[in-house]
Image (cartoon, rainbow over all chains, first blue to last red; front, top):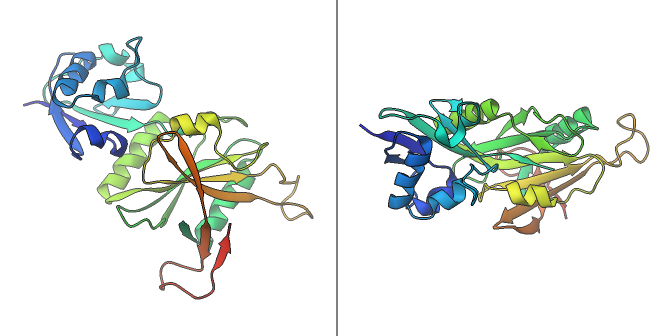
Length: 91
Length: 157
């Protein structure tokens, strides 16, 4: 068992074109580190230099926006499903 | 170039007029890789603002899940500017993250109190936004996608 992660079009350059990848970790931060080890560059696209989630992306764990569940500290476990989507916004 | 059918074009313009002076936003989905904007999906501007728009995060997830189930992608991502020209702002460029999408900008800055008055005009322009670079493209309005391409097309540039 692992955590399934859905990757948006814009980030598929890091995953060899794959729409979904698998990873592991106890928290979203650990999962992102694990994904970055397998798909270098991915973390940079998701996390700022200050260690926060970019405002340009939305991350959901089992359909719950992680902004409301502790952001990168959100707990994850095997069998969870994580979805990454680009925010659609502008001025 | 963006090819879009008349009904969808009109629906985008109508949505922009309706929500004026707040920005209107939405997507036209189409089969993946087809470059055909077929399914008009107006979205709620969760910011309800005359200077900013954003899809609600729950709506966004639902939208992408639905497109995924139908093997669709966002062919057009549209929003309106209500006081400035129909050209991507710096914020628009920084957020743009659909490499295959046509970014449609509609401006209602010349939109009067009432639709249809003299001088009432809505600008409609389309852009590609890739890695921070904006490229404007022609917009071709076709009668319908459903019955093949008709000879009566109008090219706006």
